[in-house]
Image 1 (cartoon, rainbow, N blue to C red):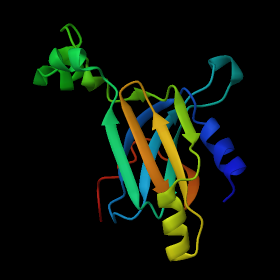
Image 2: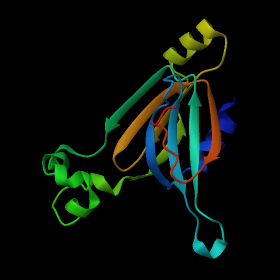
Image 3: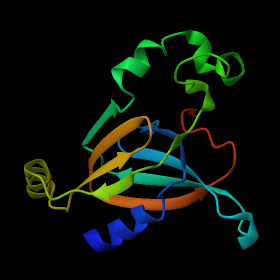
Length: 157
């Protein structure tokens, strides 16, 4: 997968809502579930898209919520929208993060070169930033597919 194609796929996710991210149930690939919407005047229906980062050998997630906001956001009532909406603090219970400033391909890292050499396939570094998380992934391929509403990646057969 070349960087230009990867960048184009990531650009399509800009400013939509991340509703889930994490390793798949089989623990090899990392997925980001995006709720993509358009202006209602376009007539396009909202969709859930699965960004599957295949052969993900490294995933790092860190909070972008500042410490002073964290300090006032520790109350467990904030993890549920109904009980947290009128409280001071970050309401975790909205259950989505805005994909802003967005996702971008990073310059090739030493780790990407090492993995590519060891496995004989290309590896890429990507940073995904939302209003609450910064996720950095090292992977080989990206696959984007539509998933049904209610898709639950954490449930296994």
